Amino acid sequence: MQSATIPDFTAEAANSSKDHEMSEFETIKASRDNAVLTVTLNRPERLNACPPQMAEELFAAVTDLGDARAVLLKGEGRAFCSGADLASNARSTQTGGERAKASLSRYYNPLIQALTNLPVPVVAQVQGPAAGVGCSIALTADFVIAGKSGYFLQAFVNIGLVPDGGSSWMLPRLIGSAQAARMMMLGEKVHAEEAERIGLIYRCVEDDALESDARALAERLANGPTVALGAMKQVMRQGLQADLATTLSAEAEAQRQAGNTQDAAEGAMAFLQKRKAEFKGA
Image (cartoon, rainbow, N blue to C red; front, side, top):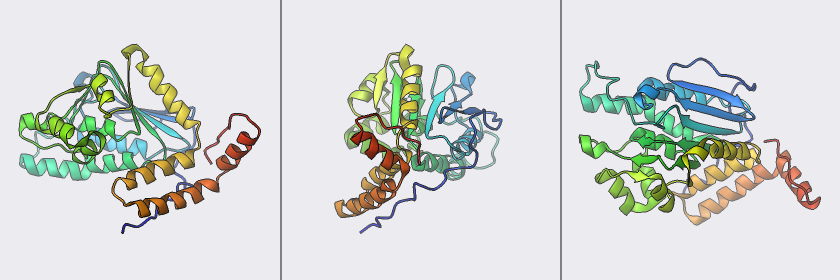
């Protein structure tokens, strides 16, 4: 039986606590505002293709939460992310396979794990393509909102490669093995409306509503009971691989942590007083 232990969600998530533009990056933009950390993939001329440098900068940004209580991931311009930048390692002396493994192990896999394990909710805002590892990055989010122009693509089969960035783990769990095989082995696009219908994403909206709807959701989550939301994320993810008894035990431990927070006390008081709770994230 697997261990029922879960992370301590009352621990500090990161270093800085001010709302501001964060450290200068070359391939992304990051800022905190109203408890939301907004991280923007910023290579619009390349449809935000993700070289190792971008993966490294994304990792740095999302692991510096400060007092952010939600993360909003988005892409600049016409795309969320068109995948890994295949041209970025062209000068490497490694063979293609060895180069790919090294990049995944050093840059992309740590990013996927960091996004998945963040102790705050993550919203991904998708317009245009979310392809290859860009699809994986988007699907690590707790909520994926896509405009009708958005689509999700695993095109690896077309160049003789296999899905990476955790897609082989995420897709069957999100949409079942038949639809996952369709995306991975046939390389078919899944447009946003269908993605919502089959359960790949949370919601498809009109393109002109995407920005405001994604931001509103991120702010709603940022105003929620942060410790409880973080615990929900981790227990749910662990439950995908655990039996019922293990999950029951993990829920009990998460409830202990959440129940000792100021937000839990505020929630109970607000319920008794028939008013809306004002959560502080502690």
